[in-house]
Image (cartoon, rainbow, N blue to C red; front, top):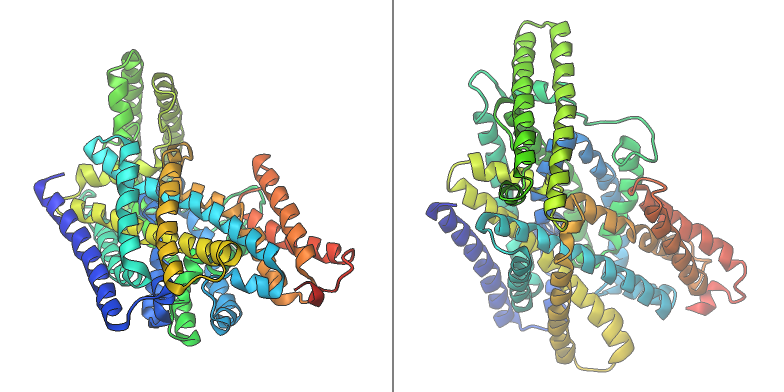
Length: 571
Protein backbone atom coordinates (compact mmCIF):
# COMPACT_ATOMS: atom_id res chain seq x y z
CA UNK A 1 0.00 0.00 0.00
CA UNK A 2 1.14 3.53 -0.76
CA UNK A 3 1.32 6.51 1.59
CA UNK A 4 -1.96 7.73 0.11
CA UNK A 5 -3.65 4.41 0.94
CA UNK A 6 -2.39 4.51 4.52
CA UNK A 7 -3.61 8.08 4.83
CA UNK A 8 -7.10 7.24 3.55
CA UNK A 9 -7.24 4.14 5.77
CA UNK A 10 -6.13 6.00 8.89
CA UNK A 11 -8.32 9.04 8.33
CA UNK A 12 -11.44 6.95 7.64
CA UNK A 13 -11.02 4.69 10.66
CA UNK A 14 -10.04 7.47 13.06
CA UNK A 15 -12.76 9.82 11.85
CA UNK A 16 -15.62 7.34 12.17
CA UNK A 17 -14.52 5.90 15.51
CA UNK A 18 -14.04 9.35 17.03
CA UNK A 19 -17.40 10.45 15.68
CA UNK A 20 -19.20 7.55 17.33
CA UNK A 21 -17.41 7.86 20.67
CA UNK A 22 -17.76 11.66 20.87
CA UNK A 23 -21.47 11.50 20.02
CA UNK A 24 -22.06 8.89 22.70
CA UNK A 25 -20.07 10.88 25.29
CA UNK A 26 -22.08 13.98 24.48
CA UNK A 27 -25.28 12.02 25.07
CA UNK A 28 -23.88 10.60 28.32
CA UNK A 29 -22.91 14.08 29.55
CA UNK A 30 -26.40 15.33 28.77
CA UNK A 31 -28.43 12.39 30.09
CA UNK A 32 -26.03 10.35 32.27
CA UNK A 33 -25.34 6.63 31.79
CA UNK A 34 -26.91 3.57 33.35
CA UNK A 35 -27.35 -0.06 32.33
CA UNK A 36 -30.24 0.81 30.00
CA UNK A 37 -28.32 3.51 28.13
CA UNK A 38 -25.13 1.43 27.97
CA UNK A 39 -26.79 -1.71 26.59
CA UNK A 40 -29.86 -0.33 24.74
CA UNK A 41 -29.03 3.36 24.12
CA UNK A 42 -31.98 4.28 26.34
CA UNK A 43 -34.37 2.96 23.63
CA UNK A 44 -34.20 6.35 21.92
CA UNK A 45 -33.09 5.73 18.33
CA UNK A 46 -35.13 6.41 15.14
CA UNK A 47 -35.96 3.76 12.55
CA UNK A 48 -33.13 4.52 10.12
CA UNK A 49 -30.59 4.16 12.94
CA UNK A 50 -32.17 0.82 13.83
CA UNK A 51 -32.25 -0.42 10.21
CA UNK A 52 -28.68 0.53 9.38
CA UNK A 53 -27.42 -0.82 12.70
CA UNK A 54 -29.16 -4.14 12.07
CA UNK A 55 -27.62 -4.31 8.59
CA UNK A 56 -24.17 -3.32 9.82
CA UNK A 57 -24.25 -5.96 12.56
CA UNK A 58 -25.00 -8.69 10.02
CA UNK A 59 -22.66 -7.34 7.33
CA UNK A 60 -19.34 -8.23 8.93
CA UNK A 61 -15.93 -8.08 7.29
CA UNK A 62 -16.60 -11.69 6.29
CA UNK A 63 -19.33 -10.40 3.95
CA UNK A 64 -16.99 -8.11 2.04
CA UNK A 65 -13.97 -10.42 2.02
CA UNK A 66 -15.53 -13.80 1.43
CA UNK A 67 -18.72 -13.01 -0.53
CA UNK A 68 -16.92 -11.65 -3.63
CA UNK A 69 -14.67 -14.73 -3.51
CA UNK A 70 -17.79 -16.87 -3.18
CA UNK A 71 -19.22 -15.24 -6.30
CA UNK A 72 -15.89 -15.66 -8.10
CA UNK A 73 -15.66 -19.41 -7.42
CA UNK A 74 -19.31 -20.48 -7.19
CA UNK A 75 -21.38 -17.85 -8.96
CA UNK A 76 -24.52 -16.04 -7.84
CA UNK A 77 -26.37 -18.95 -6.24
CA UNK A 78 -25.35 -17.92 -2.71
CA UNK A 79 -27.82 -15.00 -2.92
CA UNK A 80 -30.65 -17.55 -2.58
CA UNK A 81 -29.51 -17.94 1.03
CA UNK A 82 -31.21 -14.57 1.76
CA UNK A 83 -34.53 -15.17 -0.01
CA UNK A 84 -36.29 -16.01 3.27
CA UNK A 85 -35.12 -12.77 4.90
CA UNK A 86 -37.95 -10.37 3.89
CA UNK A 87 -40.63 -12.79 5.07
CA UNK A 88 -38.76 -13.30 8.34
CA UNK A 89 -38.69 -9.52 8.89
CA UNK A 90 -42.48 -9.35 8.47
CA UNK A 91 -43.04 -12.16 10.98
CA UNK A 92 -40.67 -10.55 13.49
CA UNK A 93 -42.33 -7.17 13.13
CA UNK A 94 -45.75 -8.65 13.84
CA UNK A 95 -44.84 -10.98 16.72
CA UNK A 96 -41.42 -10.62 18.36
CA UNK A 97 -40.98 -6.84 18.36
CA UNK A 98 -44.16 -5.87 20.25
CA UNK A 99 -43.63 -8.61 22.85
CA UNK A 100 -40.03 -7.59 23.59
CA UNK A 101 -40.91 -3.89 23.75
CA UNK A 102 -43.93 -4.44 25.94
CA UNK A 103 -41.96 -6.50 28.47
CA UNK A 104 -39.13 -3.89 28.49
CA UNK A 105 -36.45 -6.61 28.45
CA UNK A 106 -32.70 -6.16 28.02
CA UNK A 107 -32.33 -9.54 26.26
CA UNK A 108 -34.60 -11.88 24.33
CA UNK A 109 -34.07 -14.64 26.90
CA UNK A 110 -35.64 -12.76 29.82
CA UNK A 111 -39.05 -13.45 28.31
CA UNK A 112 -38.44 -17.22 28.42
CA UNK A 113 -38.28 -17.28 32.22
CA UNK A 114 -41.60 -15.47 32.39
CA UNK A 115 -43.10 -17.99 29.98
CA UNK A 116 -41.28 -21.15 31.16
CA UNK A 117 -38.66 -21.28 33.92
CA UNK A 118 -35.05 -20.46 34.75
CA UNK A 119 -33.69 -23.65 33.12
CA UNK A 120 -35.08 -22.79 29.69
CA UNK A 121 -33.85 -19.21 29.92
CA UNK A 122 -30.36 -20.31 30.97
CA UNK A 123 -30.14 -23.02 28.29
CA UNK A 124 -31.09 -20.72 25.41
CA UNK A 125 -28.83 -17.97 26.71
CA UNK A 126 -26.00 -20.50 26.93
CA UNK A 127 -26.55 -21.71 23.36
CA UNK A 128 -26.46 -18.11 22.18
CA UNK A 129 -23.28 -17.32 24.11
CA UNK A 130 -21.50 -20.37 22.69
CA UNK A 131 -22.57 -19.73 19.11
CA UNK A 132 -22.03 -15.99 19.12
CA UNK A 133 -18.66 -16.26 20.88
CA UNK A 134 -17.40 -18.69 18.23
CA UNK A 135 -18.86 -16.70 15.33
CA UNK A 136 -17.32 -13.48 16.61
CA UNK A 137 -13.92 -15.16 16.57
CA UNK A 138 -14.41 -15.73 12.83
CA UNK A 139 -15.43 -12.08 12.40
CA UNK A 140 -12.18 -10.98 14.04
CA UNK A 141 -10.09 -13.29 11.89
CA UNK A 142 -11.44 -11.91 8.59
CA UNK A 143 -10.01 -8.35 8.85
CA UNK A 144 -6.91 -9.69 10.61
CA UNK A 145 -6.36 -11.73 7.46
CA UNK A 146 -6.36 -8.49 5.45
CA UNK A 147 -3.76 -6.76 7.57
CA UNK A 148 -1.49 -9.81 7.86
CA UNK A 149 -1.55 -10.28 4.08
CA UNK A 150 -0.80 -6.62 3.34
CA UNK A 151 2.00 -6.19 5.88
CA UNK A 152 3.19 -9.80 6.06
CA UNK A 153 2.44 -9.78 9.78
CA UNK A 154 1.94 -12.90 11.86
CA UNK A 155 -1.79 -13.71 11.73
CA UNK A 156 -1.95 -14.63 15.42
CA UNK A 157 -0.60 -11.29 16.62
CA UNK A 158 -2.83 -9.52 14.10
CA UNK A 159 -5.89 -11.23 15.60
CA UNK A 160 -4.88 -9.92 19.02
CA UNK A 161 -4.41 -6.37 17.71
CA UNK A 162 -7.73 -6.26 15.83
CA UNK A 163 -9.76 -7.88 18.60
CA UNK A 164 -8.15 -5.63 21.19
CA UNK A 165 -8.82 -2.41 19.26
CA UNK A 166 -12.50 -3.24 18.83
CA UNK A 167 -12.68 -4.20 22.50
CA UNK A 168 -11.36 -0.79 23.62
CA UNK A 169 -13.88 0.99 21.39
CA UNK A 170 -16.81 -1.11 22.61
CA UNK A 171 -16.06 -0.78 26.31
CA UNK A 172 -15.62 2.99 25.99
CA UNK A 173 -18.62 3.78 23.80
CA UNK A 174 -21.62 1.61 24.64
CA UNK A 175 -24.70 1.06 22.47
CA UNK A 176 -24.99 4.63 21.17
CA UNK A 177 -21.39 4.70 19.98
CA UNK A 178 -22.05 1.44 18.13
CA UNK A 179 -25.21 2.79 16.51
CA UNK A 180 -23.74 6.15 15.44
CA UNK A 181 -20.69 4.44 13.95
CA UNK A 182 -22.92 1.96 12.10
CA UNK A 183 -24.71 4.86 10.42
CA UNK A 184 -21.51 6.27 8.96
CA UNK A 185 -20.06 2.85 8.29
CA UNK A 186 -22.85 1.77 5.96
CA UNK A 187 -22.49 4.97 3.91
CA UNK A 188 -18.77 4.28 3.39
CA UNK A 189 -19.42 0.61 2.58
CA UNK A 190 -22.08 1.37 -0.04
CA UNK A 191 -19.89 3.97 -1.74
CA UNK A 192 -16.78 1.76 -1.73
CA UNK A 193 -18.49 -1.35 -3.15
CA UNK A 194 -20.29 0.56 -5.94
CA UNK A 195 -17.02 2.26 -6.86
CA UNK A 196 -15.14 -1.06 -6.83
CA UNK A 197 -17.70 -2.61 -9.19
CA UNK A 198 -17.59 0.39 -11.51
CA UNK A 199 -13.79 0.38 -11.71
CA UNK A 200 -13.72 -3.38 -12.30
CA UNK A 201 -15.87 -2.91 -15.42
CA UNK A 202 -13.62 -0.03 -16.51
CA UNK A 203 -10.60 -2.37 -16.28
CA UNK A 204 -12.13 -4.74 -18.86
CA UNK A 205 -11.05 -4.41 -22.52
CA UNK A 206 -12.44 -1.26 -24.22
CA UNK A 207 -14.94 -3.20 -26.34
CA UNK A 208 -16.30 -5.19 -23.37
CA UNK A 209 -19.11 -3.48 -21.49
CA UNK A 210 -21.14 -4.44 -18.45
CA UNK A 211 -23.71 -6.46 -20.44
CA UNK A 212 -20.92 -8.28 -22.30
CA UNK A 213 -19.35 -9.16 -18.96
CA UNK A 214 -22.63 -10.67 -17.75
CA UNK A 215 -22.85 -12.75 -20.94
CA UNK A 216 -19.33 -14.11 -20.38
CA UNK A 217 -20.13 -14.90 -16.74
CA UNK A 218 -23.34 -16.64 -17.78
CA UNK A 219 -21.62 -18.86 -20.34
CA UNK A 220 -19.02 -19.74 -17.68
CA UNK A 221 -21.81 -20.90 -15.36
CA UNK A 222 -21.47 -18.02 -12.87
CA UNK A 223 -24.90 -16.39 -13.33
CA UNK A 224 -26.67 -19.28 -11.62
CA UNK A 225 -29.03 -17.01 -9.73
CA UNK A 226 -32.04 -19.31 -9.25
CA UNK A 227 -32.01 -23.09 -8.82
CA UNK A 228 -35.57 -24.47 -8.80
CA UNK A 229 -34.45 -28.07 -8.23
CA UNK A 230 -35.45 -29.37 -4.80
CA UNK A 231 -32.49 -31.19 -3.28
CA UNK A 232 -31.98 -31.41 0.52
CA UNK A 233 -28.27 -32.02 -0.06
CA UNK A 234 -27.82 -28.89 -2.16
CA UNK A 235 -26.56 -25.96 -0.10
CA UNK A 236 -28.10 -23.21 -2.20
CA UNK A 237 -31.35 -23.47 -4.12
CA UNK A 238 -34.65 -21.62 -4.07
CA UNK A 239 -36.22 -23.99 -1.55
CA UNK A 240 -33.34 -24.11 0.91
CA UNK A 241 -33.21 -20.30 0.73
CA UNK A 242 -36.94 -19.75 1.23
CA UNK A 243 -37.49 -22.45 3.86
CA UNK A 244 -34.14 -23.07 5.54
CA UNK A 245 -33.11 -19.44 5.08
CA UNK A 246 -36.42 -18.24 6.54
CA UNK A 247 -35.90 -20.28 9.70
CA UNK A 248 -32.26 -19.19 9.98
CA UNK A 249 -33.07 -15.48 9.52
CA UNK A 250 -36.08 -15.69 11.83
CA UNK A 251 -33.93 -17.25 14.53
CA UNK A 252 -30.98 -14.93 13.95
CA UNK A 253 -32.96 -11.70 14.03
CA UNK A 254 -35.56 -12.93 16.53
CA UNK A 255 -33.43 -14.74 19.12
CA UNK A 256 -29.78 -13.70 18.65
CA UNK A 257 -29.09 -10.93 21.16
CA UNK A 258 -26.61 -9.23 18.81
CA UNK A 259 -29.61 -8.39 16.61
CA UNK A 260 -32.36 -8.17 19.22
CA UNK A 261 -30.23 -5.65 21.08
CA UNK A 262 -30.03 -3.51 17.95
CA UNK A 263 -33.76 -3.16 17.32
CA UNK A 264 -34.59 -2.87 21.01
CA UNK A 265 -32.77 0.48 20.81
CA UNK A 266 -35.72 1.83 18.78
CA UNK A 267 -37.71 4.55 20.54
CA UNK A 268 -41.00 2.77 19.86
CA UNK A 269 -42.49 -0.42 18.45
CA UNK A 270 -43.15 1.38 15.15
CA UNK A 271 -39.56 2.60 14.82
CA UNK A 272 -38.18 -0.89 15.50
CA UNK A 273 -40.57 -2.38 12.95
CA UNK A 274 -39.62 0.14 10.28
CA UNK A 275 -35.92 -0.58 10.92
CA UNK A 276 -36.41 -4.32 10.46
CA UNK A 277 -38.51 -3.86 7.32
CA UNK A 278 -35.82 -1.56 5.92
CA UNK A 279 -33.31 -4.35 6.48
CA UNK A 280 -35.59 -6.85 4.74
CA UNK A 281 -35.93 -4.61 1.68
CA UNK A 282 -32.25 -3.69 1.30
CA UNK A 283 -30.30 -6.75 2.39
CA UNK A 284 -31.01 -8.98 -0.64
CA UNK A 285 -30.09 -6.27 -3.22
CA UNK A 286 -26.96 -5.45 -1.21
CA UNK A 287 -25.84 -9.08 -1.12
CA UNK A 288 -26.62 -9.40 -4.84
CA UNK A 289 -24.35 -6.44 -5.63
CA UNK A 290 -21.52 -7.78 -3.46
CA UNK A 291 -21.65 -11.16 -5.23
CA UNK A 292 -21.87 -9.33 -8.56
CA UNK A 293 -18.57 -7.61 -7.79
CA UNK A 294 -17.06 -11.08 -7.41
CA UNK A 295 -18.56 -12.08 -10.76
CA UNK A 296 -17.04 -9.01 -12.42
CA UNK A 297 -13.66 -9.89 -10.92
CA UNK A 298 -14.08 -13.38 -12.42
CA UNK A 299 -14.76 -11.85 -15.85
CA UNK A 300 -11.75 -9.56 -15.47
CA UNK A 301 -9.52 -12.59 -15.02
CA UNK A 302 -10.94 -14.14 -18.18
CA UNK A 303 -9.15 -11.39 -20.12
CA UNK A 304 -6.11 -11.05 -17.86
CA UNK A 305 -3.63 -13.44 -16.21
CA UNK A 306 -4.97 -14.81 -12.94
CA UNK A 307 -3.00 -16.16 -9.97
CA UNK A 308 -2.84 -19.93 -9.75
CA UNK A 309 -3.52 -19.54 -6.02
CA UNK A 310 -4.71 -16.24 -4.51
CA UNK A 311 -2.94 -16.48 -1.15
CA UNK A 312 0.40 -14.94 -2.08
CA UNK A 313 2.02 -15.78 1.24
CA UNK A 314 1.73 -19.52 0.64
CA UNK A 315 2.87 -19.39 -3.00
CA UNK A 316 5.90 -17.30 -2.00
CA UNK A 317 6.81 -20.01 0.51
CA UNK A 318 6.47 -22.65 -2.21
CA UNK A 319 8.91 -20.83 -4.48
CA UNK A 320 11.57 -21.15 -1.78
CA UNK A 321 10.81 -24.73 -0.81
CA UNK A 322 11.90 -28.21 -1.98
CA UNK A 323 8.67 -28.25 -4.03
CA UNK A 324 9.62 -25.18 -6.09
CA UNK A 325 10.18 -27.11 -9.33
CA UNK A 326 6.84 -28.94 -9.05
CA UNK A 327 5.13 -25.63 -8.37
CA UNK A 328 6.80 -24.09 -11.42
CA UNK A 329 5.46 -26.92 -13.60
CA UNK A 330 1.95 -26.35 -12.19
CA UNK A 331 2.22 -22.61 -12.89
CA UNK A 332 3.17 -23.31 -16.51
CA UNK A 333 0.12 -25.57 -16.86
CA UNK A 334 -2.01 -22.85 -15.29
CA UNK A 335 -0.66 -20.23 -17.72
CA UNK A 336 -1.32 -22.45 -20.75
CA UNK A 337 -4.87 -23.07 -19.60
CA UNK A 338 -5.55 -19.38 -18.93
CA UNK A 339 -4.30 -18.58 -22.45
CA UNK A 340 -6.70 -21.17 -23.83
CA UNK A 341 -9.50 -19.70 -21.77
CA UNK A 342 -8.76 -16.19 -23.04
CA UNK A 343 -9.01 -17.40 -26.63
CA UNK A 344 -12.35 -19.06 -25.83
CA UNK A 345 -13.61 -15.85 -24.24
CA UNK A 346 -12.64 -13.84 -27.30
CA UNK A 347 -14.46 -16.40 -29.48
CA UNK A 348 -17.50 -16.02 -27.25
CA UNK A 349 -17.34 -12.25 -27.55
CA UNK A 350 -17.27 -12.48 -31.35
CA UNK A 351 -20.16 -14.94 -31.38
CA UNK A 352 -22.21 -12.65 -29.14
CA UNK A 353 -21.72 -9.71 -31.49
CA UNK A 354 -22.87 -11.76 -34.52
CA UNK A 355 -25.69 -13.57 -32.67
CA UNK A 356 -24.01 -16.89 -33.50
CA UNK A 357 -25.74 -19.17 -30.99
CA UNK A 358 -23.79 -22.26 -32.03
CA UNK A 359 -20.53 -20.36 -31.61
CA UNK A 360 -21.68 -19.08 -28.22
CA UNK A 361 -22.45 -22.59 -27.02
CA UNK A 362 -19.15 -23.95 -28.31
CA UNK A 363 -17.15 -21.16 -26.68
CA UNK A 364 -19.12 -21.54 -23.44
CA UNK A 365 -18.35 -25.27 -23.37
CA UNK A 366 -14.66 -24.50 -23.94
CA UNK A 367 -14.64 -22.00 -21.05
CA UNK A 368 -16.28 -24.46 -18.67
CA UNK A 369 -13.93 -27.29 -19.69
CA UNK A 370 -10.93 -25.04 -19.14
CA UNK A 371 -12.29 -24.03 -15.73
CA UNK A 372 -12.46 -27.70 -14.74
CA UNK A 373 -8.88 -28.24 -15.89
CA UNK A 374 -7.78 -25.17 -13.92
CA UNK A 375 -9.43 -26.63 -10.81
CA UNK A 376 -7.32 -29.76 -11.24
CA UNK A 377 -4.14 -27.70 -11.46
CA UNK A 378 -5.18 -25.73 -8.41
CA UNK A 379 -5.78 -28.96 -6.50
CA UNK A 380 -2.21 -30.01 -7.36
CA UNK A 381 -0.91 -26.69 -6.00
CA UNK A 382 -2.97 -27.08 -2.83
CA UNK A 383 -1.39 -30.51 -2.39
CA UNK A 384 2.09 -28.98 -2.67
CA UNK A 385 1.15 -26.26 -0.15
CA UNK A 386 -0.02 -28.90 2.32
CA UNK A 387 3.21 -30.85 1.92
CA UNK A 388 5.28 -27.74 2.44
CA UNK A 389 3.20 -26.35 5.32
CA UNK A 390 0.66 -28.75 6.90
CA UNK A 391 -0.90 -25.88 8.90
CA UNK A 392 -1.35 -23.62 5.84
CA UNK A 393 -4.69 -22.05 4.88
CA UNK A 394 -5.38 -23.92 1.63
CA UNK A 395 -8.74 -22.30 0.87
CA UNK A 396 -8.12 -19.06 -1.02
CA UNK A 397 -11.76 -17.91 -1.38
CA UNK A 398 -11.18 -15.24 1.26
CA UNK A 399 -8.16 -13.88 -0.63
CA UNK A 400 -9.67 -13.43 -4.13
CA UNK A 401 -11.12 -9.94 -3.76
CA UNK A 402 -8.26 -8.70 -1.60
CA UNK A 403 -5.64 -9.84 -4.13
CA UNK A 404 -7.53 -8.16 -6.97
CA UNK A 405 -7.84 -4.90 -5.01
CA UNK A 406 -4.13 -4.79 -4.18
CA UNK A 407 -2.98 -5.72 -7.70
CA UNK A 408 -5.25 -3.63 -9.92
CA UNK A 409 -7.26 -0.89 -8.20
CA UNK A 410 -5.86 2.67 -7.94
CA UNK A 411 -4.13 3.97 -4.85
CA UNK A 412 -6.47 5.77 -2.51
CA UNK A 413 -9.32 3.43 -3.34
CA UNK A 414 -7.22 0.56 -1.98
CA UNK A 415 -7.02 2.37 1.34
CA UNK A 416 -10.77 3.07 1.26
CA UNK A 417 -11.64 -0.58 0.59
CA UNK A 418 -9.32 -1.79 3.33
CA UNK A 419 -10.95 0.76 5.65
CA UNK A 420 -14.35 -0.59 4.62
CA UNK A 421 -13.31 -4.09 5.66
CA UNK A 422 -12.09 -2.83 9.00
CA UNK A 423 -15.23 -0.78 9.57
CA UNK A 424 -17.55 -3.70 8.92
CA UNK A 425 -15.50 -5.80 11.30
CA UNK A 426 -15.60 -3.15 13.99
CA UNK A 427 -19.36 -2.76 13.63
CA UNK A 428 -20.28 -6.44 13.75
CA UNK A 429 -17.72 -7.38 16.40
CA UNK A 430 -18.67 -4.43 18.61
CA UNK A 431 -22.34 -5.46 18.44
CA UNK A 432 -21.36 -9.04 19.26
CA UNK A 433 -19.24 -7.98 22.24
CA UNK A 434 -22.14 -5.87 23.52
CA UNK A 435 -24.67 -8.70 23.12
CA UNK A 436 -22.38 -11.26 24.79
CA UNK A 437 -21.90 -8.89 27.73
CA UNK A 438 -25.60 -8.06 28.08
CA UNK A 439 -26.62 -11.73 27.99
CA UNK A 440 -23.92 -12.75 30.46
CA UNK A 441 -24.81 -10.01 32.93
CA UNK A 442 -28.61 -9.95 32.60
CA UNK A 443 -29.35 -13.65 32.07
CA UNK A 444 -26.58 -15.25 34.11
CA UNK A 445 -24.83 -12.88 36.54
CA UNK A 446 -27.81 -10.78 37.66
CA UNK A 447 -30.24 -13.70 37.61
CA UNK A 448 -28.16 -16.48 39.18
CA UNK A 449 -25.10 -14.98 40.89
CA UNK A 450 -25.75 -11.40 42.12
CA UNK A 451 -29.48 -10.68 41.92
CA UNK A 452 -29.74 -7.63 44.22
CA UNK A 453 -26.83 -5.35 43.30
CA UNK A 454 -27.05 -1.72 42.22
CA UNK A 455 -27.39 -0.48 38.66
CA UNK A 456 -23.85 0.93 38.84
CA UNK A 457 -22.56 -2.52 39.86
CA UNK A 458 -24.22 -4.16 36.81
CA UNK A 459 -22.90 -1.42 34.54
CA UNK A 460 -19.36 -2.14 35.76
CA UNK A 461 -19.97 -5.89 35.41
CA UNK A 462 -21.05 -5.31 31.79
CA UNK A 463 -17.74 -3.63 31.03
CA UNK A 464 -15.74 -6.45 32.61
CA UNK A 465 -17.87 -9.06 30.84
CA UNK A 466 -17.17 -7.32 27.54
CA UNK A 467 -13.44 -7.60 28.22
CA UNK A 468 -13.73 -11.29 29.11
CA UNK A 469 -15.65 -12.14 25.96
CA UNK A 470 -13.22 -10.11 23.89
CA UNK A 471 -10.36 -12.29 25.11
CA UNK A 472 -12.35 -15.46 24.38
CA UNK A 473 -13.21 -14.35 20.83
CA UNK A 474 -9.59 -13.49 20.07
CA UNK A 475 -8.59 -16.99 21.16
CA UNK A 476 -11.20 -18.47 18.79
CA UNK A 477 -9.84 -16.28 15.98
CA UNK A 478 -6.45 -17.98 16.32
CA UNK A 479 -7.99 -21.20 14.96
CA UNK A 480 -10.29 -19.64 12.32
CA UNK A 481 -8.00 -20.41 9.37
CA UNK A 482 -9.11 -24.04 9.61
CA UNK A 483 -12.72 -23.23 8.62
CA UNK A 484 -12.32 -22.49 4.88
CA UNK A 485 -14.73 -19.94 3.36
CA UNK A 486 -15.56 -17.59 6.22
CA UNK A 487 -19.03 -16.62 4.99
CA UNK A 488 -20.03 -20.29 4.79
CA UNK A 489 -18.36 -21.20 8.07
CA UNK A 490 -20.15 -18.52 10.08
CA UNK A 491 -23.54 -19.54 8.64
CA UNK A 492 -22.88 -23.25 9.24
CA UNK A 493 -22.00 -22.44 12.83
CA UNK A 494 -25.20 -20.44 13.26
CA UNK A 495 -27.28 -23.24 11.77
CA UNK A 496 -26.09 -25.65 14.46
CA UNK A 497 -27.83 -23.59 17.16
CA UNK A 498 -30.31 -21.13 15.68
CA UNK A 499 -33.03 -23.63 14.75
CA UNK A 500 -33.23 -25.08 18.26
CA UNK A 501 -33.34 -21.65 19.91
CA UNK A 502 -36.02 -20.55 17.46
CA UNK A 503 -38.02 -23.67 18.29
CA UNK A 504 -38.01 -22.69 21.98
CA UNK A 505 -39.38 -19.24 21.09
CA UNK A 506 -42.01 -20.71 18.75
CA UNK A 507 -43.27 -22.89 21.59
CA UNK A 508 -43.21 -19.90 23.93
CA UNK A 509 -45.21 -17.67 21.59
CA UNK A 510 -47.63 -20.05 19.92
CA UNK A 511 -48.08 -23.29 21.92
CA UNK A 512 -49.28 -22.15 25.32
CA UNK A 513 -50.16 -25.67 26.48
CA UNK A 514 -46.49 -26.70 26.65
CA UNK A 515 -44.51 -25.98 29.81
CA UNK A 516 -40.89 -25.52 30.77
CA UNK A 517 -39.92 -29.14 31.55
CA UNK A 518 -41.03 -30.48 28.16
CA UNK A 519 -39.47 -27.55 26.31
CA UNK A 520 -36.13 -27.86 28.13
CA UNK A 521 -35.66 -31.55 27.34
CA UNK A 522 -37.00 -31.12 23.79
CA UNK A 523 -34.32 -28.48 23.17
CA UNK A 524 -31.58 -30.77 24.54
CA UNK A 525 -32.67 -33.70 22.35
CA UNK A 526 -33.11 -31.54 19.24
CA UNK A 527 -29.69 -29.91 19.67
CA UNK A 528 -27.99 -33.32 19.90
CA UNK A 529 -29.79 -34.47 16.75
CA UNK A 530 -28.81 -31.31 14.82
CA UNK A 531 -25.15 -31.67 15.78
CA UNK A 532 -25.12 -35.35 14.77
CA UNK A 533 -26.87 -34.53 11.48
CA UNK A 534 -24.15 -32.00 10.69
CA UNK A 535 -21.33 -34.30 11.83
CA UNK A 536 -22.52 -37.17 9.62
CA UNK A 537 -23.47 -34.77 6.77
CA UNK A 538 -27.05 -35.99 6.55
CA UNK A 539 -28.32 -32.81 4.87
CA UNK A 540 -27.22 -29.36 3.70
CA UNK A 541 -26.62 -27.00 6.61
CA UNK A 542 -29.47 -24.55 5.83
CA UNK A 543 -32.03 -27.28 6.48
CA UNK A 544 -30.69 -27.75 10.01
CA UNK A 545 -32.48 -24.53 10.98
CA UNK A 546 -35.90 -25.86 10.01
CA UNK A 547 -35.13 -29.31 11.39
CA UNK A 548 -34.02 -27.95 14.77
CA UNK A 549 -37.05 -25.71 15.12
CA UNK A 550 -39.59 -28.35 14.13
CA UNK A 551 -37.95 -30.98 16.33
CA UNK A 552 -38.21 -28.78 19.42
CA UNK A 553 -41.90 -28.13 18.79
CA UNK A 554 -42.71 -31.77 17.96
CA UNK A 555 -40.70 -33.35 20.78
CA UNK A 556 -42.04 -30.83 23.31
CA UNK A 557 -45.62 -31.72 22.31
CA UNK A 558 -44.90 -35.41 22.88
CA UNK A 559 -43.05 -34.90 26.17
CA UNK A 560 -45.78 -32.65 27.53
CA UNK A 561 -48.10 -35.67 27.48
CA UNK A 562 -45.86 -37.33 30.07
CA UNK A 563 -45.41 -34.26 32.29
CA UNK A 564 -47.94 -34.34 35.08
CA UNK A 565 -47.91 -30.65 35.86
CA UNK A 566 -49.88 -28.44 33.45
CA UNK A 567 -47.96 -25.76 31.60
CA UNK A 568 -49.23 -22.90 33.78
CA UNK A 569 -48.01 -24.48 37.02
CA UNK A 570 -44.46 -24.83 35.72
CA UNK A 571 -43.92 -21.13 35.21
